[in-house]
Image (cartoon, rainbow, N blue to C red; front, side, top):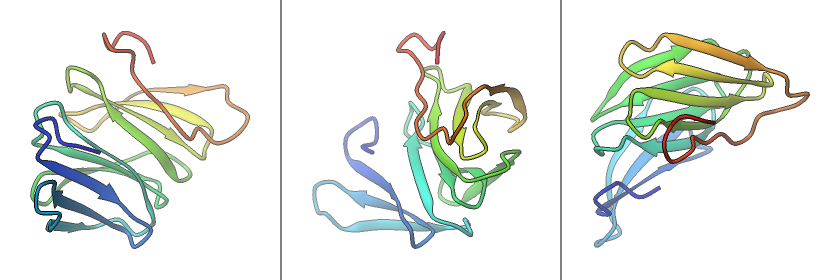
Length: 132
């Protein structure tokens, strides 16, 4: 995923790391470690200062130059994460068949949506942030 300014790319890997890359040089800028499982999903915040990641280890993590916070609550791997357009909410989809909404500042779970009969592999907010 590209940063909002288009200068960096963030990637998540089966090697359990998150890596930041310089778009123009192609060189790695930074490696972030902390997940104990594959990293399936990463996204920059709207201002490009924070990265959210979702992992096989069932956690969602927030990062700046280091890990800021770990959000726990899913009972299975987290396959998809996304910031709301205003950056206040994090949306997540998991192998536990739920979609969850989290307060991005406090890390507390706001809501859990159940109803899927299998893994939720992708989540997304509408452009205005009012629907998922």
